[in-house]
View: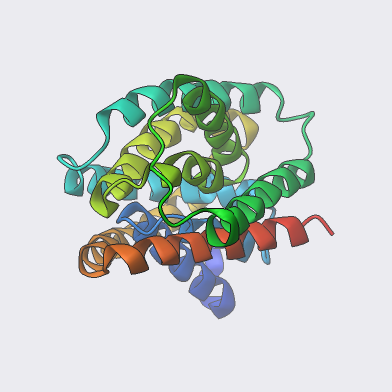
Length: 252
């Protein structure tokens, strides 16, 4: 357990905390997947569960900023499908927290992300038509996104496997992700508290990182607006692929 009350003596931890908070902000500003690196980075100094609990307040503040920035840019039908499914996934993860291995979840999610990216890059025809929102697929992938988000803030790959084939405009894609995961993150507050109660030092550390996350959120929105659609989705897929590899490797 890191000494949050004496961070001045641990500059490496301070750097990782600040960098992780900035990654969370970038993700909430429209660059999905990059925030998934935050828990693994902090796991160098602490358990993944403590890292996930510490980052939750930062996610929630970034969500508030992100939802405001994208309040007019999102896919309503996908939001209506994915939020209930995601909340169901959170309930399942909470109920099975003491049974399901983190390594098994990491391997499954990483494997899905890798297969999806390889399929998009090498097997999909250039003239393939975009898919449409689907109730069965939305329930399945939304539930999985809620489940993996609860386990390690890693809901990005299932969400992207479902959303990317729809070829949504980049700002709609980013806004949909921001709104869906804002609700999912709020639903994690009580379960996380029961699994690992917050203490004063943890909350102080989170408060110290909130401005960094807010800056990252605004920066993420600006970058999303300025990137071309082609490069935006290519970067999303590359980030998904790299994170998925890391998830698989973390099993060994």
